Amino acid sequence: MSDYFVDVPLRWSDMDAYGHVNNVQFLRLLEDARVVAFSDWFGQDRSLVDEGVLVARHEIEYLAPLTFRQAPVRIGMWTMRITPASFDVGYEVREPAGSDRTPDTVYARAETTLVLYDFETARPRRMAPHVKDNLLSFGGGEVPFRWRRR
Image (cartoon, rainbow, N blue to C red; front, side, top):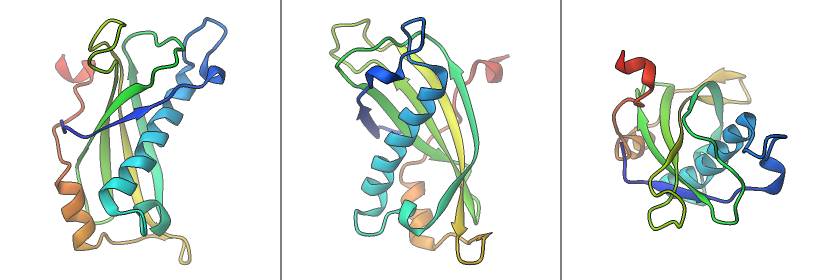
């Protein structure tokens, strides 16, 4: 895993009828973190989002209920499985260190496959060497899903 993280605030509307952050809203939290990360990783003037990238796959494992609060959650992120036109991002949604809640609680782990995409040709596009180098600098291991430990 990487030492890179983004603190993402929760919204009141993220909660479901049980008072927990809805499972679908976790994907929004990951997207919010990803947009910030890409700006940090690739620069504000020309982020990977601006050049074209699509989500091809999500996998998420919910580990603890997350209830609404004013303080943000911390989302650790790293890259893995980089191919000529795609890469995977791993995530860990957790309680930030120093929080007054149960410290280091992991609420969810997730993985997203992203494909570089050319909207003009409506086809995947090849990764530029500098993009691959940036992604490699945030590289980490596989997401430690429970099913992988069996």
